[in-house]
Image 1 (spheres, rainbow, N blue to C red):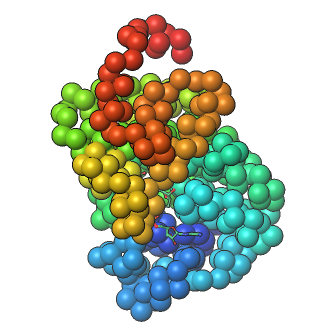
Image 2 (cartoon, rainbow, N blue to C red):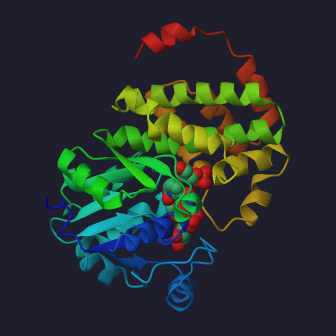
Amino acid sequence: MKNINDNIKKIGVIGAGSWGTALANLLADKGYHVDLWAYEKEVVEDIIKQRENRLFLPDISLSENIFPSDSLKSVVSENTFLLIVVPSHTMRDMCKKIASHVQEKTTMITASKGIEDGTYLTMHGVIAECIPAIDKDRIVVLSGPSFAREVAKKVPTAISVASKDRMTAEMVQHIFATDYFRVYVSDDPIGLELGGAVKNVIAIAAGFVDGMQLGLNTRAALITRGLAEIRRLGIRMGANPHTFAGLSGVGDLILTCTGDLSRNYTVGKQLGQGMTMAEIQDKRVTVAEGVRNTSSVYHLAKSLDIELPIINEVYRALYENSSPANAIARLMTRPLGHETIELEEI
Ligand SMILES: NC(=O)C1=CN([C@@H]2O[C@H](COP(=O)(O)OP(=O)(O)OC[C@H]3O[C@@H](n4cnc5c(N)ncnc54)[C@H](O)[C@@H]3O)[C@@H](O)[C@H]2O)C=CC1
Ligand SMILES: O=C(CO)COP(=O)(O)O
């Protein structure tokens, strides 16, 4: 039987942070020719000379099928299958830069997690707005519980890909799937993206709990009530509520709220241990999307008049000098609620 992807031989990847590099390596290992654009010249040189990206994904040997480049124009204009994995706050600028080089019939997959401040668009919304040449059905979201380092080490992992067009999503499913990377199809891009973006904020709060050494009860409560907030926001944004029971909902929430590899959880934990945001950010080269996204999700919820108590508390701790201890105290003394009624409102 002819594989539905037999005509795709080349893939362009925009962004060589840990996630872009890990996914590029997965695709290259499958035999695709991968053109990988990196923001830093040193990353391009490192991959050419050492077959390694020591800045963002050290100690992982990279396939000879990866062709690193600092030319956005050539990576974009020479590929009709593009994966974009830049930090969410740079997505709009990046899309504007590449828009005129994008070919017709391009399929673009976004693996970035975030909600744009001000517009409250998810990443596929930003791509659709800035690159009109791409048919909206050909924008695909890839999201789920997946630490780049574990994928790079071929640890069994499951994620989802979503598009409004099922055939496009299935094509992407087959392109990425391997025996250690299991890919499910979804028809709910907005749900996948909201799950992936908002869990980063909840992970910061889970970090508070562990940084303060509160206990496993507290963390389980935080994850569960965090999921309720993600679902509440998601439903108002038009997502399918069932999506949040899936990989890019509860799956990514569990991973990020419990895994020491999570940058967002680590930021929360350091705050919980008494460090300040300035001290934490001074030492980081990698992105913790939840820091910026706390602000965008907080303002989005305000604009929709939705109550998201955990998000509010993370916002106060990050942006209004409140402490993680105050956050937990306020969450525990809110007016008592009714779980069944809340769930039945869906
Ligand atoms: N690392 C992971 O395990 C996963 C990351 N993601 C998402 O992937 C996206 C990218 O994150 P990572 O690969 O982890 O990044 P990273 O934290 O490993 O590296 C930072 C990246 O930002 C790039 N960068 C910095 N300034 C830039 C600019 N002005 N324009 C374009 N690029 C710039 C750097 O070149 C580098 O690629 C994020 O949205 C993240 O949430 C999603 C799933 C897993
Ligand atoms: O999104 C991720 C795993 O699915 C990565 O989480 P962090 O950005 O918190 O490291």
